[in-house]
Length: 530
Image (cartoon, rainbow, N blue to C red; front, side, top):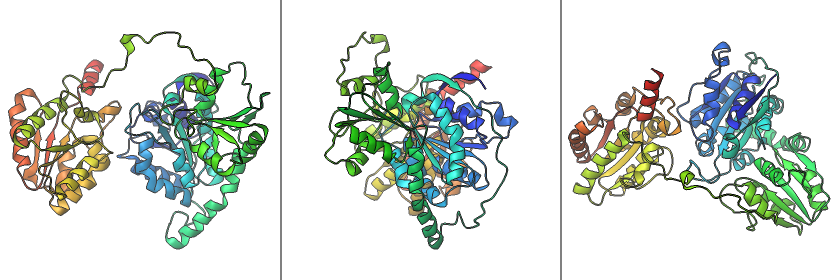
């Protein structure tokens, strides 16, 4: 229909819209956020009544998407790689229930941890769940995989995991669009017990999933995304997965001298792999992320073959794949043509000037250091995690979404006093509420600071599920109303905030302090729009 210059994330979003999407479900997380934002900004959302609101977390997003599939509609659920950990319960079981309407689960991995607390490879989740996987090498493939992936999901009766990486998500290329498809009609599965995973039925469903594995391999062997490209030099064969193929071609713009197996669909295509290993003395595996393919090849194809990749040091085990690391693995000379100017040198992130979190940390650390010198503060995932850096040096942990409250509780159970948790409003409704319920049920001696900037600030200012509801949620969970305290974190309220923190730190029970002031960035954007 038309060619557009799109980010990888945008290509995925447009592919879903053109394929007859009925709903996208997601929680913001770099590098996946722009997919949902692109759909939200599309005029088709209102015209075609497409669901596009943010979910409270990745688990609820996955479950809602499966519910939309239940009624025969096509659904896309998006998250970053650590979101797969949150969604895993439903995701793994969705492989067992299967789907009705097409369901694509988009996992955006972040090799080198540009904006993440770990470096994990979502392909292991797809392999664990025994479902088909797709991994694009460029933006056009990202579009095509989503556009055709819904039909593939419906044909196989299974969810499809699509895995991308940061560089693909956030780089642009021209994308040719296909014809826009209508949304599916409402329909229900012919099997009334398909989605009921009582043990007797779950065993039957799981066996049916196991029986499909040969079909999935056959689909990979015949997939347009898996391509065997012969080359004259048989001393080495190359397996290039996803964006790794793109990097390989950057090093061989006129064609590679070695045989290449391009992989974009999983499970691994055994026929092509066997052909490559018969032809070549050494196998080099190019994959961005962990050695997912390399481990499998060493398992069932390593018959005296010399296999090179991340596990033997040919490529770095950690961090992103890049054209430079690929060039080095190929033995090609890699000469830097220019110096990186100081102007664009890496700088550590910092809390914005005027940010309410700054006043919270200043008050909290002043009280704690003067009155509780052995204190520890458990923090969470968000802008306020930057309180770990100078000049604040205010927090002692950041593990996963929601862990601040539960770690503080565990430390209090172990005898730490005071046990302090710092969590943001969006993270609280994502994963903090159940931890607060544990604290209330056991009357734990914890002080929880819900630093409320009325948005999901770290990922760009998306709506927060808890805006206007934090006090009611805490009261509903069971926190005593007199120990739910609200303050505006401004210089003029500094002494009031310190006294409030001091009072609640001294209280031997569950207390919640809510410093509330709108994020300086979202406030600035509102003013510019006006």
